[in-house]
Image (tube, rainbow, N blue to C red):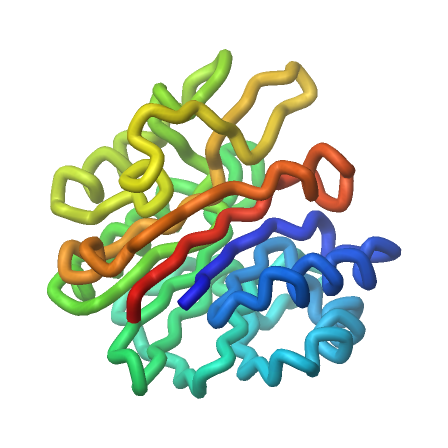
Amino acid sequence: MRIATWNIRAGGGKRTARIAQVILEERPGILVLTEFRPDPGRNLLELLQPLSYHVAAGVPTGAQNCVCVLSRLPIELVAIELLPKSLHRWVSVIVPSLELTILGVHVPNQTEIWNKREFLDCLEAFATETGDKRSMIIGDLNTALDEDCEGEKIREAVCLKRLLAAGWVDAWRNCNPNAREFTWYSHRHNGFRLDQCLVSPSLANWVTASSLRHDVRIGRLSDHSMLLAEFSL
């Protein structure tokens, strides 16, 4: 099964049809979109109807970027004990037929009004609660280890380090141990691998491949590359 995540930048706007074309080309079984917006998102979901996705999306309180989880298999929302205040950037579901729990996230930037530290605390709590199951954390984590930064470093990487120390596995890094690739660049041309898929210890052996589509970023379809991961589920 192909699982993907992509930050489509501010809902997609006039790029929606081309964004849909890329997704239809890749045909992921599960897709986590970040910076999804419900109003323009309706058009995107209509264009994706050939893939017959089941959809779960965060609910904004205004014109806010959300997370949207799409699955070709039926999904159910799953309750997690500790939830962030920016709940529209957090969608947790289970795919019953695969016994797979998925947390789709868009971690806030340090400069946003949302509390990044509080969000990361909730993310770590999810990892603790679901670490003994087949689980994944996927989306725009807005953090990266030093080796996944070109230029400035991200201080909040301590959270990511704790997850990896607890046995969670970075799917892309596991398949590309010596590579240096970045999914987003700042206006200062600093690169960061922000878009990630972390899998629980019991799911790690099911990852067979992972890659990044940089053409969608280089061609300005979004300001983020798309992350793809293959699982033998």
